Length: 234
Picture 1 (tube, rainbow, N blue to C red):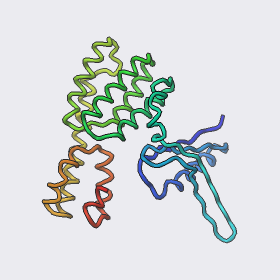
Picture 2: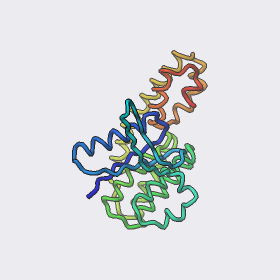
Picture 3: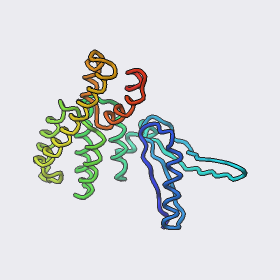
Picture 4: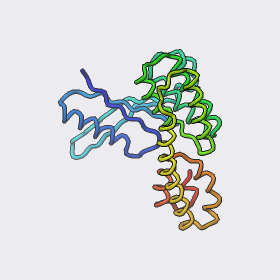
């Protein structure tokens, strides 16, 4: 059996091609088998053949790997809906997450995809795993989170299949995550205030408070080297 190495990449990373080579080689070195590497691009980049190369004093290394972009499926929604491949649901979640950060938009599609899991009669284990992916990809602002929990609870009662049990436990787990996120928000706003002044922090407060954890993490890193506040958020 040939092992398949898959890397999911959401944002531009200067070292991504090198990382693909390193992971491919480490798997080969560990198991002494040929490895197929594939990059899955979840952002707006086009699919292409990735390439890592280096050359010195007559020694040459060239590593190429294919990539696929989820954006290629934006205009093929009906195919995804008709597919019985579990990964089709993951692709749909990413497409809807990239469409908008609006809470109502994300809440609607989050519930639509969760309903789809039951309608397709997936196993309980598959539903739980796909639910976790959907929940991670289609993050919601605080204003929409309580509505989501209420809709999820009502839907499970309607279906009489409480696979994503329990909503109460889920709510507690989300509460912990929300507490962690609020801590990240507080730290980033303080960083903005110290570096760019109280007015800058106030101007960007709404966007920071409505952002997901991944964005907060990215901005907290960029603020360390950014010269202007626009460089942080763009």
